[in-house]
Image: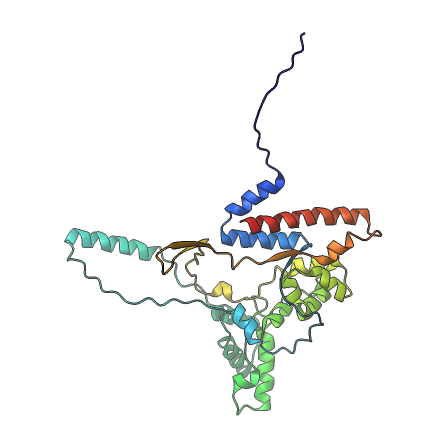
Length: 331
């Protein structure tokens, strides 16, 4: 066998994991990118959302309704369309018959009215042996609930200025009964009480969940779990387990009973015409949160006494977080 040498020029494109991730991020529409970021925040503890949060401990919630938070949770969208006049020419009889047939098919495919939240709650009252005054007060509270399922009012305002102490006592008992009904969380006066009502007393994370909901919801929204571990007495693993359970809670328990609406279309780009007559293409990125790598983990890897396994875990997640941040920035 004869050995020979040969010179060859060849081009190859090798896709690194970083390049593959950048290509995937580039192709995602806004809604899917938001979902992807949410998944990464849940899986990677080094990722944080850049958000101004005061360092001092949060004050204990007084149960009163925070208008800003509740508006963000219970926001409703509506559009009004102006009436238009159809000035088309008179159609033939065949066209009218075909139009009526298509119209009938359209109405046949429209979903019938679904059960409302109030109807769903009223059915459950048959499980209880209620006196007439109690049943009347419970029904009154049920029909005072917001579409989100919240009872966003004080009982004093609900009853009116001329209410008696007996009526107030009855209303408190009636509200407590409503809060025992399904869906879990209904009847809460605000987001915090709604989430607290959904805690399973038998859950091993019940105590941790109460602390997180009462004092650390702002930290959880920006994925600052390491900051919670630093301020509280719980380990990071315990907090992660509780947060994973918390993500299964419904902040708006009444939303499943709202009438179905047309899906909202969110464009990825906007094309705007300036006064000069030129068109400018703008990417819609205002909905995408700004991410960063947790400084606490970054400092931990620099310490000599940090365990090797922990350092390996931090490096792996730090690289993954850095790739994601760079991919979003290049998008």
